[in-house]
Image (cartoon, rainbow, N blue to C red; front, top):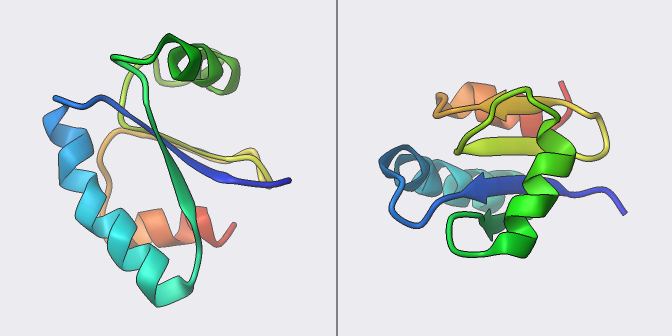
Amino acid sequence: MEELLFFTGRECPHCNEMKPLVQKLEKEEKVKIKELEVWHNAENAKLMEKYDRGFCGGVPFFFNTKTGQWICGAVDYETLKKWALGK
């Protein structure tokens, strides 16, 4: 099952900056982005390592399991939307 994954840290300011954009995208494009907190959850951190493979090494980290595309760090809405829609 393909998923849109958003790896985040609870106290991460850049992650928190992305949350309103993620919510807007979910509402406007009818997609679901699964948020996974990694700083306080070892299981989620391990999953992030599996997908990250050294691409980013930090949060926020977005991964599209369908396309294999990823985003490192905070980005603008249009970039996030293209990633989510596989464009």
